[in-house]
Length: 257
Image 1: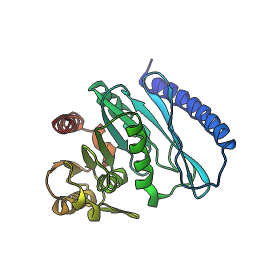
Image 2 (image 1 turned 120 degrees about the vertical axis):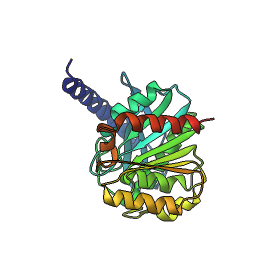
Image 3 (image 1 turned 90 degrees about the vertical axis):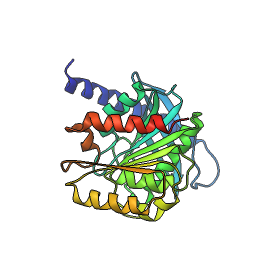
Image 4 (image 1 turned 30 degrees about the vertical axis):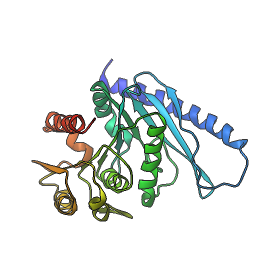
């Protein structure tokens, strides 16, 4: 089957599963008691072939929100959470997530609120809150070692969350030092875990942010600048694809105990 048809088939299968999950979660919430607050529900996971669809429900100011994602290699021990960039969604990570799973990692992709399968209203001020919920869901699945990898705004949010979570390491690809209410420059000095910063030299804003973040970071830290101007997950689809995959796999292997 051609790649385009495979992706279309995967999309429609995931869309069906997302609708099914929404119906299940809605029926479960209809019978709940007590005032609406900011409490989180238990993550729901449905097997769907090469990956598993995951839904993470929670109440935010009385509104039910369910972060939707996909879980690759769930039986693997070390967890990796991939956070997408703007205006993209988790689908930009699909091929990369599958490769990481084949290398032995339990990988979660997800859509921030207002994006992709999650849908709803966007709130870029709460990127870190969404990501923190995914971290908790992965811990609930028994993953003790968790890495965060984020592209652009997802990289900024990953650094903010890494400053307050006990993680194995964090990789930021083309991450702005500040994005909306997410201030990675203020957070990065508090991150004691290993850090890897990646950007393209002609992606001027990202390269400038990388220099600022490296300067504000404590050890252990590393950086890699690639030629060209590709940004975020677009870097994974160009001439440096193989080199970046090798670099990231080396980082994960080195810092997994």
